[in-house]
Length: 272
Ligand code: MG
Ligand code: MG
Image (cartoon, rainbow, N blue to C red; front, side, top):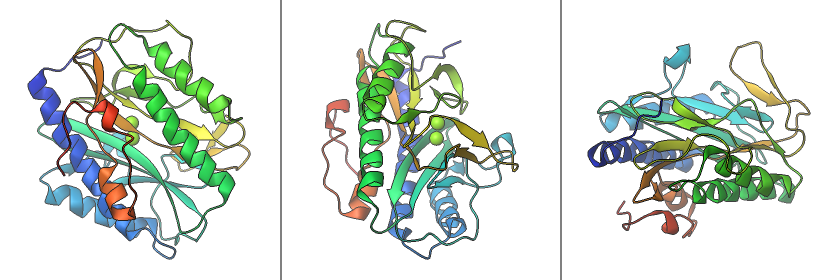
């Protein structure tokens, strides 16, 4: 059952989302060759708690840490460890926070130093596909419209769209209805209604769409060990249109990037 949110609840969800956004910005400042994913995890936990929230993933389904850290061929759900990041790596960082009874949950894939042009293109296309998908999250469209748009966009570049893992509704639970696959058929699936909040999160592989799970019960890796990218935003359906609750602006601030990619999905200017 889809739980729609009131305007007040959507503002509370924006607060939770922005706590995650700010946390990813703090983590972005510390990403460099030599840093370990466990060190980044500590930065994130502290940043979330400093904002009066609690880490959303820690203990959820017994996940052991604050961040899901998935380098290179890992797709999602990687567990932070003491391995240092290396120049040329990419690292998908997924973060959740809970405040006022509502979750924020989003993700960004970062380059570590200089990366190859092929991998840079994978990151670019995957992030673009996130916005291609968000654009379809509007009144009277359906779940399949978002999935179809993301799938077409990524497959046109020869990439594999992961099937087993999907986006989701978001609210008082981390995972609510509906499931939001990154593949699908136009006009199929549940219809979008005013007040819905979803996490849209393409997980896109450079090679095969196929994946495997590690023995730790968490880490997901591409079957061909080629790189995988993952970007996620939290979006509410307001006045019939997609309204971004999360932002990558803190990340871009940390990395010195200028971007207006989010402007079309925001009714008011975001003040950081
Ligand atoms: Mg996430
Ligand atoms: Mg999610």
